[in-house]
Amino acid sequence: MTTVVIGAGHAGLAASRLLTERSIDHIVLERGEVANSWRRERWDSLRLLTPNWQTRLPGSKYDGPDPDGYMTMGELIAFLSQFASLARVPVRASTNVTSVTRVDEGYHVATNNGDIRCRSLVVASGACNLPSVPSIRSSIPTTIEQFTPFEYRKPDSLPGGGVLVVGASATGIQLAAEIHHSGRPVTLSVGEHVRLPRTYRGRDVLWWMDVSGVWNQRFDEIDDLTRARKLPSPQLVGTPDRTTLDLNALNAIGVELVGRLAGVRDGRALFSGGLRNMFSLADLKMERLLDTFDEWARVNARDTDVNTPERFEPTRVPPSSRLQIDLRSGEIRSVVWATGFRPDYRWLHVPVVDEKGHLRHEGGVVESPGLYALGLPVLRRRKSSFIHGIEDDAREVIEHLSEFLR
Ligand SMILES: Cc1cc2nc3c(=O)[nH]c(=O)nc-3n(C[C@H](O)[C@H](O)[C@H](O)COP(=O)(O)OP(=O)(O)OC[C@H]3O[C@@H](n4cnc5c(N)ncnc54)[C@H](O)[C@@H]3O)c2cc1C
Image 1 (cartoon, rainbow, N blue to C red):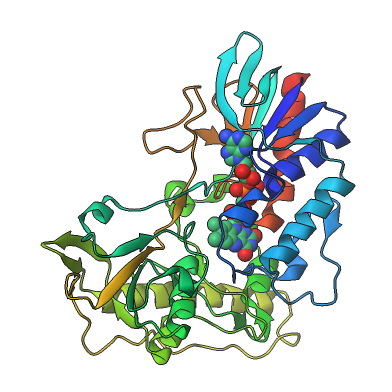
Image 2: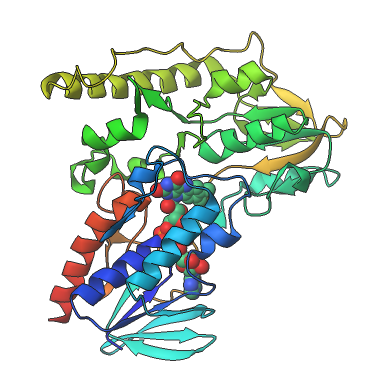
């Protein structure tokens, strides 16, 4: 086999389509089935936070009646499955890659379904294979049930009573709102976050990210790439009524905001102070971004196509935020860790993974001949890990792979 692609999420499917275009023979190995992460690892109510018009892959884009809507999991799974069949992606499903090692002229790929030798390999196994949970979790009293976003399906997954949601990025804010609406009191522990309005000057904020070129910014033009790659997901939710779900909205429905979870001592959860600083930093960054959008509209004479500039109320700081909660008091019955995700390369026995568990690569070209990656945060552009971001990256990475084979 010339090329093996690991993973049949959107990244692996896009890679396959472009390999086919170049007549490079290949196979896509998938431990589950096409769109496995969306089928098995997401909660029931999740919708994409990217609008439908942005759901596009090489040679295929959303063409339904609601371009400004946000896909449900069922709709996205159908979109990806249809893409796989139209593009005739050679997926070998139920095939778990258990080990990849370097051999003379390429790689030895061991799976539960037989072994394969290949000259080149595309790692498209995802950036979010495991929930990233801080070690504090082991200090939480055993009377409290703990959930990661992989275990949480719907509010009824949780026991009744108070819930501490840790993390206020896209996952945390969405789960906090949903759990609150189920009647359970929710406390949300807020760390560094990226605040965005759902719509700005009458357009989806992600339209602005697209047209203004922010999302297209290349990895080799970003000053602090390590930081850009670690940036949390923006506080956005995709709902039919295009609501903004920021901390003000959560506060207004009765979600209690506390600082970053700093530790658990003697059964007490300890939260950092300094909410005011953290909020104003997020507000400031949002305003700078909105300034960039305004400037783009002005320079490109688009001011008349969009509504007038808006500015949003600063994030309201609660008059007093609690610095600790006694986890033995019965107030909190469960903790939901919305503290991010990380990749899992335990099967990759090539020395290309750093001490933090991240792949060492330069724009998707991994430090081992013929080894490539796709779908990682800011791989080649700010949009790299989003569905609409894969095509540009995949074209360049597959071109490099093709040169390598030549
Ligand atoms: C909660 C959440 C919400 C998101 N919302 C959006 C959104 O609204 N819009 C957007 O554009 N992006 C969104 N993303 C980001 C991104 O689009 C998804 O993470 C997407 O799943 C990434 O696609 P991928 O193909 O890179 O990886 P995945 O979809 O994770 O695909 C990787 C595949 O590899 C398989 N695999 C992994 N290891 C092995 C192995 N050892 N052997 C065989 N197969 C293996 C997995 O089963 C999986 O099918 C979201 C991410 C998360 C976590």
